[in-house]
Structures are given as structure tokens and as C-alpha cells.
Amino acid sequence: MHIHPDARSVVRALAPDEPVIINRPHAAERAARFFVEKFPGKSLYAVKANPSPDLLQVLWNGGVTHFDVASIAEVRLVRAMLPQATLCFMHPVKTPRAIREAYFEHGVKTFSLDTIEELAKIVEATTAEDGTPAADLRLLVRLRVSSDYSELSLASKFGVDLVDAAPLLQATRQHCDWLGVCFHVGSQAMTPFAYVQALERVRAAVAEASVVIDVVDVGGGFPSVYPDMEPPPLKDYFEVIHRHFENLPIAYNAELWCEPGRALCAEYSSVVVRVEKRRGDELYINDGAYGALFDAAHVDWRFPVSALEDDLRDPPQEFAFYGPTCDDADYMKGPFMLPGDIQAGDYIEIGMLGAYGAAMKTGFNGFGNAQQIVVGDEPMASLYRGDRERPVTDNVVSLR
Ligand SMILES: *Cc1c(COP(=O)(O)O)cnc(C)c1O
Image 1 (cartoon, protein in one colour):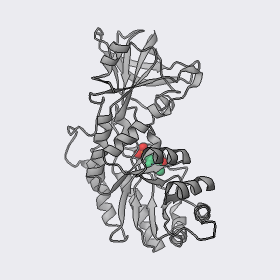
Image 2 (tube, protein in one colour):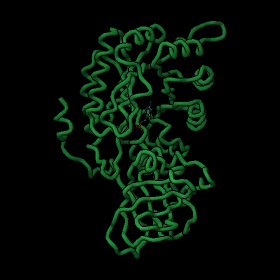
Image 3 (tube, rainbow, N blue to C red):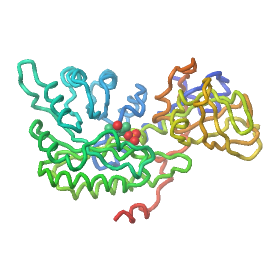
């Protein structure tokens, strides 16, 4: 495989007419090793953030052995790629057929749920034809927690409310020898406190239910770095989670899990786009809302940008982007800071698109093509380079 040094050399070599996805496997592998070595428990990769088979292999090489899958298609994909991987089906609403196939054909034992109906569904779908119930289920009850400290909420859709958690935990315990609690604090949690309030809710639920808990899964939400979103170091999150986990009223040998998506793969990809037209401070580029820039358009996420030209002299100014399709919704307000003399024909690297970016490209309006190319330089920002270390900050001290 040919590895280009960086995005500029890709532009020089190809002068691409269509957007190009630039991948940095070394950055994803470094993120994987960081979680594997530093998180005080087991790290499951949340496949939905980016299901690219190349990336799955890179994360496996980096030491990730457990995968959080949410659909039968993700189960099949990861199983086909990585026969030895442990798969955990962590979507709280599944079809009976998906559960059955996952359990009987792909060896999936771990499932999450947030209602008594889903528990019944899992139990029934994993019962053998002769009526023998599964003896090896590992079930996690998903608790609803606040998303107040995160940039993207996951609080409304899933999770049992604290008042209903105890009976559900007790009922679930009847069907498995291995019981867990999980939650998701929302994506891009900007402070470790997000996990503290969630773990306090776990404490309350477990205390009331008086059941033995074998695993606490703190979910995803670990941040990456974007313009105006500079989180504290990840080790602050790990320390706070570990401390509060150790104080929970659970089995002495209980495990701690997490399910990072974004934090493991954000640095993996950029997209290289070309400016096709300029209108004042609006740039018409060849990727957008239906491509790798869904979040830029729909939740006004700001991604780092860099012009890939040598002849631009003007100081940076604010630009908005239009994508290539024919509708007004294909608009990204940014602002994106680029040299004031940028013009049609110039190329731009848009960074940190490995999570929920490159994976979400569609073919709408005929604009879905994108070559994938590997480069060897550093991502536009990184949480793992070792130069972001700072002492445990007020972020943590102010927790309680
Ligand atoms: C989306 C998701 C994740 C990953 O979330 P990030 O914010 O990307 O870390 C983890 N667990 C579950 C259940 C999810 O739905």
C-alpha cells in the first residue's frame, strides 16, 4: 500500500476532482493503545462511530479485543473481520431474530436492555429449541443518565429511569449469572464530572436493588479535540471514573468497562475537499451535509481546517461552507478559519472526521464517491501525542 507523507502531497499527486478521505492508521492505533494501557478496565470499541474494516483491524492491532455492536449487520461485519473478538450487543432495542442470530451463530453472550419487555425478548430468543434457557447470558441494564455535560445528548432515547431500575435489575438477575449496569453520558463529554453524576446514579440503583453487580460499563462519551472544544486530558477522566467505581457497593471482583467510539477514531480520518466557487465569505466545496460533514451541517460542529496551498498570503478569516448537493440544507455555518485570499480551485483539509464523519457519507445527488488514501503525518489535533499533559485540573477538583 502506498503511503503519502501528508494531505498536500496527495493533492499534488492527484489534483482530485472528488473529495478524498485521508486515513492515519498510526493515530487510531495510538488511541487504542492509550485506552488499552491507561483505562483502568476493559475498553470496547463502539463500532457505530466508524465501522471501516481497515479501522477495525487497526484497533485490534492496538489491543482492542471487545466491540460494542448495535445491529446484526455490525455483528456480522466484526465477526467476519475478527473471528476472535468478543462482541457485545449494546443496543437496548433489538429484534428477536437479530438476538437469535447473534447468540446462536456469532457467539454473542452480552446484551443490554432497558425494559422488562426487552429482557423477555432476549430470554426467549436465546432459549434452545428443546426449551432449555441459555445458561451463559451476560446482561447489562442501561440506566438513563443526564447528558448535561456533553455536546451531543443521548439522554432521551434509552435507559431505565432510576425509580424503575431496582425491579428491572432484580428481574434481570434471575436470568443471568453475570449482571451489569451501563449508561451513556452523551457524546463529547467535556468534563469528567459527567461520569461522576452517572456513577452516583448507579450507586443509588444498585443500593436499592440489593443485587450483586459483576460489571459497571461507563459507556462512551470520551471526547476528542475540536476548535473551541478542548477537553481536559483523558487521564483525568480515567482517574475520576476509577475512584468512583472503587467506591461502589458491588462485587469485589467486579469489572469496569468503557465503550469509546469518538475518542478511538476521531483522529483516524480527514477529508480533502476542493473549493469549487467562492461567494463572499461562503465557499462552495465538494463535500457536505450528505457526505463526511453531516455533523458540521446538522449540529454546527466545528472541525479544524487547513488550506493546502502555498501561495495564500492573507490572514485567516471566517468562512461558511456550502456542500455539493442542490439544496440549501447542505450548508455548514462554521465559522471555518481560512486565508482571506482562498479561491476556487484551492484544496482544504478538514480534520478530525474519523468519528461520525467519514462513516456517514451517502451517495445523495450523485456525490458520494471518495477515494481513501493513507498518509503518515500527524492528525490536525491529537489527545495522544503526549504534549497535552497538564496537572489534574480544577475540572476535577471542583467535582464535589
Ligand atoms: C454511540 C455509542 C457509544 C460511543 O459513543 P462515543 O460518544 O462516540 O464515545 C458507546 N456506547 C453506546 C451504547 C453508544 O450508543
